[in-house]
Length: 309
Image (cartoon, rainbow, N blue to C red; front, top):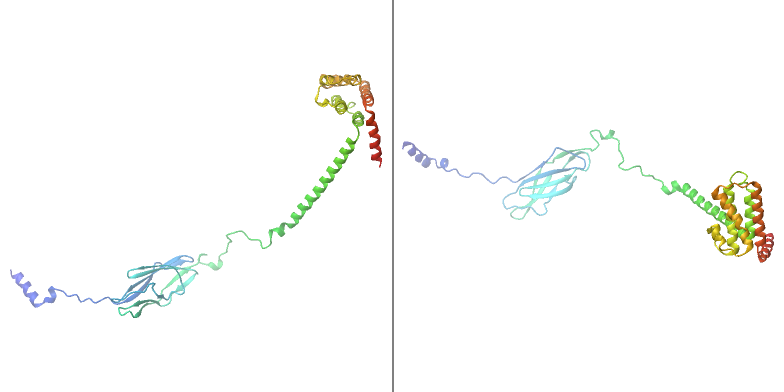
């Protein structure tokens, strides 16, 4: 009871002790600046935070007017209650220092005012290491030639073009010569071509060198081609028996014995003597002379005359 009376008396005598008054004044207006790191590498971003306290009724214009960052590139800016966060790009190595930082605002009478704070600095490290002067630069790409690739390979291009042109004219000359040879060959009538072919085959020495079958394959082919030319049926595609069914005169039947014997040599391993071979060659030449049309002989003389010219 005595304790309670003491409390009542204290409250009446010292009212300030029991009911504290709010003596705090409005916080003073001001501006502070801070960085999120002390060092940064070249090409990276560092964040600057401007914390501010405005007088009662003051406002910041939009966008904010901030001075002292002229040496920096501002990549981004974000405004929050009581602070502004700026993303600054560190573009070159060295010690980067701001000027005196200031933030403009309008007081409650709409008069322009400024908050200021001391400059700040940050060390920007080189991407080449602690001793950039000793670093060796390396190209991302290969060395780009200063001369045109066309000029470099021009001699080779010229050589290829010359080779193509030379090849074209050589091929053209070869084909022209070959065609001329074929024209001269086929300018002769069938019986002349057949006789030349048999004489050439006989002089080749195939029979004497043991290539008897090869000789008779060529021999029978010449006779069949001659028959095909003068009789008008595909004798080269026919067997000897099929040829016999297309022959209707006695002279042509005489050549059948040569074809049959050629078949025996080619397919039955018959081995004729040199004398027998000579007899068959003579018989074939005689058959050709006997079956050559008279008008073809006349053509031969005309062709011979034209060739002489």
